[in-house]
Length: 366
Image 1 (spheres, rainbow, N blue to C red):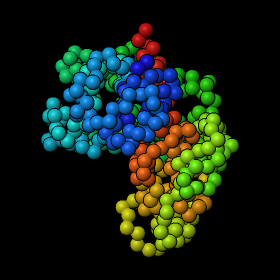
Image 2: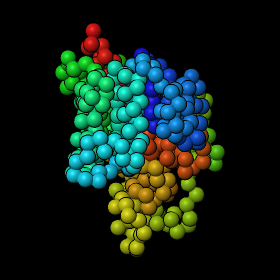
Image 3: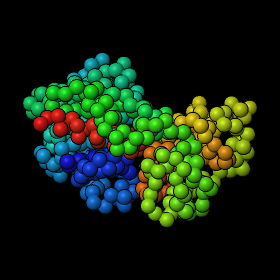
Image 4: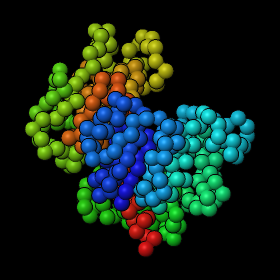
């Protein structure tokens, strides 16, 4: 089945669908540095590096181009000028990213679309934003007589064997509604367990990164032998792994980190720390899950990202492991870009589950 990935980032969503046997035909990413990571890891995909507004107007997408459209339009621009704006919501320039996701779906007419977004989208503007999204995709008139049936669920990464307390809203639109969504969800889980018996096991930080060892200046290390089922699942058939670099922290920062024990944060320092993050200068615990990996996992003030036993923040490879990226996935670009790529990605293990679920949804049409 053919897939188009909008707002693809480095390709976390695509990875799961590719692993499940889909063919990603096109991916759209505005940031050239991030798009390079996607291209280098998926040379078979046509990666379009452009603003989605330009792409939509260029006629690059046509009806029937894909069976499935996936992507997470950024929600930062969502706004409502009044208590309830019907078409005004989608025509508000601040919401153009969402609008163009909608318009590509309207043009291509996929059998299914998958939209990923922050859990908080449900409560933005007292829930009116979420109501509008559900209404627009269900509106027969706005979709030329071909509306979608909407299913949505808040998913927790830990429930998919990912060592991270990440929660996201998943919205799935289908043409066909002749199925029980929860039943297919459970069937998908059962089928994956037959293929990967440990897929949904609870995974800790140590299970994920315990075998990586010390960082190197260029990030290249000898490929370590996997010690856990999770490490075996992500393991690469390669001599070396990449992206295992450390951030160069100041002496003051290193001193602060040295005084924070596992599970503690900046409150243990007894000094004023300029950070809006409640987990600032937090140290991870080996036997727990990490909090959500954000784009600032290289910064102690950005959250609870200090290594469990070393006085440094997580390396990109460690953060990628916690996000469930396979070990042979290489991130390109400068430090800021790589952190952004990893922090904004959908965990590939979650994506793989969704891909298998979508196969069952489409299969139920027959």
